[in-house]
Length: 159
Image (cartoon, rainbow, N blue to C red; front, side, top):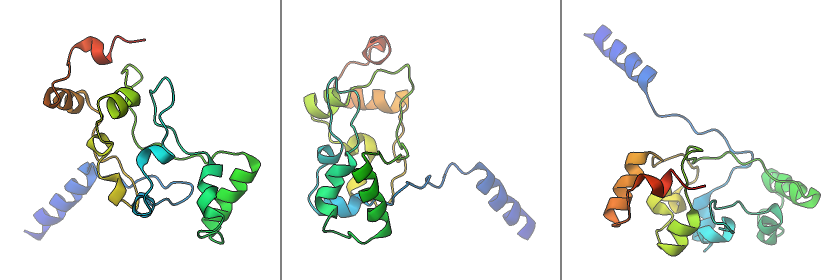
C-alpha cells in the first residue's frame, strides 16, 4: 500500500502543472501597491494603439520611493536604473500567441472589462503567476457571457 502511495505522489508531482513563478528582478507586491490606492492603469498605461498595457517607467516608481523604503536594496537597484534611464527587465506573466489580435484598449477602456476578469485578483497578490488561461476557449466563453462576437475574424484576421 505504501508503494502505491509513493508512486501516486511521484506520478502526481511529475505531471503537476503547478509551476513556480520565475522570480522578478525586483520583488513587487501588487497587494501593497493596490492597498496604497494605485489603480492598474496608473502603472500599466494603455497607450495608442492600445494593444498592450505597458509597464511604468522607473522614474514613476521613484516618485514615491524617494521617501518610501528608499534604503531597501531593491529600491536602491530601482533608483539606480531610474537615474541611468534603464528599464527593469520584468518577467512577463501573460502572453497571447502572435497570431491572436488582442486590444487592451478595446477590452478595458471601451468594454469596461475589469483587469481581474483576465488577470485574476492581482490586487490581492504578493507574487504574480498566470492564474487565468489565455486560451481560445477562455476568451470565447467570456465573449459569449458579454454577448460579444465570437467570429474568427474578431481575433485572428486583423492586421
